[in-house]
Image (tube, rainbow, N blue to C red; front, side):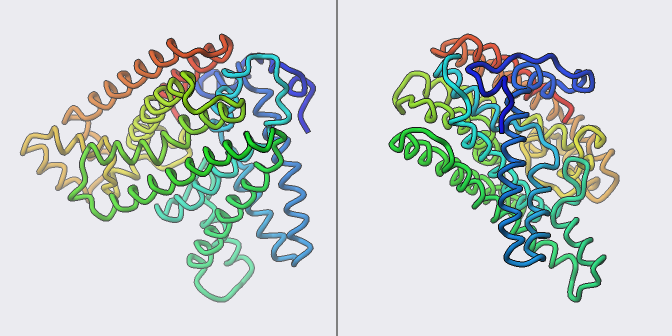
Length: 380
């Protein structure tokens, strides 16, 4: 299931492939954890293959549905959450522990991530993800191609909800394959459940903000970032890794991971806000300006409204239904982009300070330092 480098005690640092050198986060992941990513993908392929086969035995249509779910999991992605969980674990255990016993738990986070993405795309009515049609759009196209009756869009959304649900169940099932002491696995499960609760809380606040933008604020936008992104992207995966290592909840390393993960996770989401407005669709895999076009109350847009002069605010309101390029230009003119860049820099500084004081394995410290920069200085 895992290659020889992973089956041993140490992951080797592989050089970044030439095609990844322009993508900071991919470059760092390749340099430090390419073998981990390969091992996670190999495990997911094996696990999902067995699950698809089992569902195909129920009905051939179930097999096609399960295959669509597998494609949603394996269709790209940087494997960020398993990576942070790995370094959270490795930072505690050092280089002498074997990876395979905890690998299923790390890979389960990718299934949880797919659950969140597929449901998020339905809620946001997004049409592309990672440069490909989103799950509900792809399923709707299959509905049309098959000549089925009914509304293809409604069918696509319904099936996408089930795809997300199945990923959640598969994540639970794969997590149970981790071979760690039962008492420790219980603590791991508690951490995992808290991550899921916080993800749902953040997603609800995100949906609420879309429907109550007039009463939103910078503080609430940051709260969404904290729970929708920071918790399940960086902070909780790190703590999940610490739990896998058997680190007590009151240990200094847990406090350091908590501070580091919150700061970096918020910075990661703030960078996403900027990329959503100004990023290159060829790199991000999503249309530019979607959040601005829909008036989504991100920290960027909330700051623009807060910083705008009366004249600028009136211009922002007038531009809301016009070309998105003009709206993006007006947002930048308020100073909101520069302010968000400063907020990112402040959080990166806080994350690195937490890491400097953490009682963490030296190799893990090096990797996490590199990932801090890569997660916040990126094009996708």
